[in-house]
Length: 169
Image 1 (cartoon, rainbow, N blue to C red):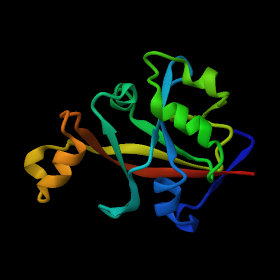
Image 2: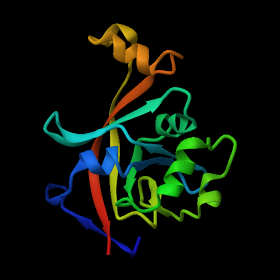
Image 3: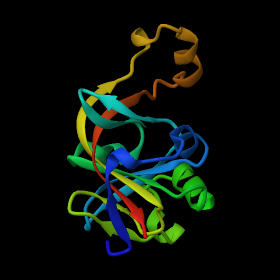
Image 4: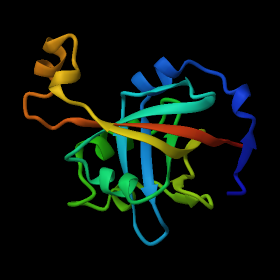
């Protein structure tokens, strides 16, 4: 972790609409023995329960969900618009079928809580606080459920407290 320095979460800058929605992020959980990552282009950053949090959405079919469920911490790695080929690969392929780390050349770094990637520019290390399954009954605009969940592959919604933010030095 010597290529990263911790920063005060209150000093985070940048547009997270761009960071998440256009540049994307890798959500990663696991250990040195076994980890998995997935690309996310949905999510958010904000304040809830007087804590700095991220909102992460992981479909029930995703292999990464097992790793998030089985660990207390996970990370969001941001690459600043770089590594898009790698992010596309991690979004289109399952860790059940392919070694995404090997195939993309991403280099895992291990914080004491959760893994992230050497190539990241910004990493948010998050502690799980809350999980809930989206359901069709919860949608006010039913067309959103129809458009996004016709296969019933619902998202699990996670709220994670940002316990640490690190940037590349």
